[in-house]
Length: 279
Length: 191
Image (cartoon, rainbow over all chains, first blue to last red; front, top):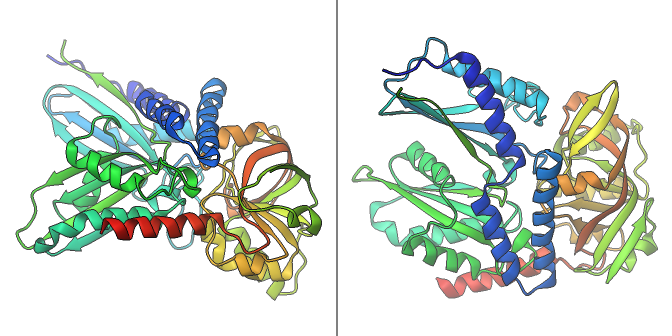
């Protein structure tokens, strides 16, 4: 038997994970930044990383957002197929966003793409972006990943020919090179290979949620190449251009090879909650 | 070198700055990003007067997160935004107003000529919105709130705002461009 999940529980959980995501950086990211600071030898690079670490501390102590760009809100929902809900999950998430925008507070970032008029509450057509995945069990896991525009704007997608797989590495490096200091390095690079036009982008984005330290050989080697470019923290030169590279793959059409690169700034914000579950 | 400067800035204040120097700013600064830049240029075209004075000013590329409490505005978080988005509008802005410094992050494209003997670009660490907020002492006023909270022009009083790295000085030196050239060279070796 599974317990029914109440609407209010979802609403307040959404407010809580948003507050945590916006004000406290995940420990693996903080550890990676500290490690980077200890390795930098250029004074300018060292100063940038020290400022970042000081900022993380101030935001945590004062319970204010780490960055004024509190992002657009992207939710990843893992919905257990036996979870009992008698309300609209989407409405409950939107309600949480509305409350969090006022109470944390969050900067209202959602605007009409053409008129640019601001909705004022981070809610608009298709925003926040909620991605659902059906899972086993009776619980719901909700993850929020606020995504700032500085790094998102430097992301790229390309449809390669199937025989061009050797060019994937260059594409990732060129994307990072073109981005320079704009996406607030040290960055985290999410790479989605395969799937379809849209799936590659989704893979790249979800790759950003992985623990920064968990990298396989392929990812580590790409990270080494990125850091050899010397772009450094904030594009002012240095050894740390990226903290991590995560690659996710999916099978694709035999005639296709989509590749997406989603760039994430050092403020790799995300937080999760699991509600409900078996008795 | 490290400098402490107070607004309004004089030509001599910025003339001594070299790319790579550190600056701490005190005084009044104005936030302006995409929409505010566009409106400043439009008003010039329409021969309308700005509601704020940009002579000797510092423009901060920032869309702050603010809180209103009983009619009084407070800064919650106010880090720099990506300056390159304003690159195209900056030469014209420098032609019509004596802005002396831009504060932002990530550098700007093709502005060294327009800034020569006129203005500097100061880089504040991107994402450090809480750190920036503690050196903002007061919100003087807000202009053009109709553009929305991030795009409005916020007039802020800062004290020892920094550390800011001189990214582009007024002598045609661009630290970001130097780093980018070296990165391109490093990339061509990897190919």
